[in-house]
Image (cartoon, one colour):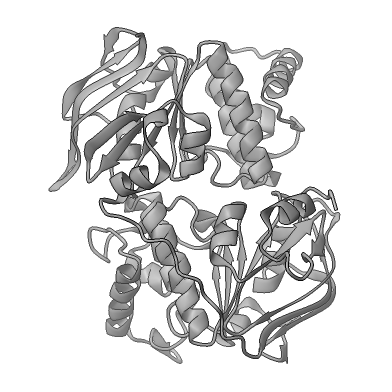
Length: 498
């Protein structure tokens, strides 16, 4: 058996926190190997240690049989190890081609035509399409993820670490990605997949390593385990199946009529949309990335202008209301991109708790800021979904991605919301946290709120939403009566097959 990666008794502490405790990892060459665990289990820390982005306190790392000590990620890249993290390293003001080659130009003089030809060849190999002269700022999160993966190939990575690579991809894009990864593996490359999605483990991986609380608790052949056992190993207890639920439907909290929204490329991204969300119900929007969900979401929260139509919030015309006015009326949002739209990373948890709500009770009365009340609220928000942090005075950037997501989701549910708009609310969350967030949204719906949820994970919508509508090429489609939760019907609507 030939190992591409061997990590032996890897330990790492951050102050009093033991992030990794004598962890072993053995990855066979030419395979896709999954690393799973709850948020904070140590998965990303272990991968950063392999990638040279973190120095371990103890332990040994071997790459393709050679013991190595990486002092930087540059050294890891030179040894054929590449990593795509949850937080993209894309520079918006550069073109796609410039982002691809940045840091790996190969010399002081560039042949841009030759570089573009190579870029196009790598993209075609993966089944990706890019306008190489387009600014990266225009890329969707899914497009940015694909570009990050191409950067690994550009740097000739043989060992590729992918941290939640499908978190922003549609089911079709995710499946296409794994088809491409299997081609790379067939050529002798090795993929280490950090994921919370068990179907990805069982559909595409040969072995799986489970971390919990900074320790390795299992390493198994995927063929020798099952989803129930793996979920129990990850969480440390048995997860009960959700019980059947019948919502108590009330008055309309959101009504959209003949809504047109211009896209970011000047096209019409949402065309004549009509739908309602009622108190007590959770409505899911399914669709492949780029179908107009993003533009619709921004129009609803008031950050994108509409071309025509009407938005009614709690029986009030909200079409021309500012985002602030919509927040005052009871709208709350869990944005798609928490870094760009939901937090200020340098600010503390305490300050971020009031972000967007800073002029409302309990955070303030008029111009008077209630710092004590804000701290109490910050603690309550942190506790709702068990956000792990070093104190509410710490910058939110000090939290893991999953814990930041827990905090943002809990803030949106704070203070009796009337309408919850959630875009990928469980992005990057583990099994238990995903369930916690959706149960939290459900709890607010039970108290009279309505919720509209956009997710690229159809299984997630099917499990948690009361009904599902589909966006395809800017239009909205609703399954027929009796087919509201039929995955085959919804899947065909997503790709325009019906």
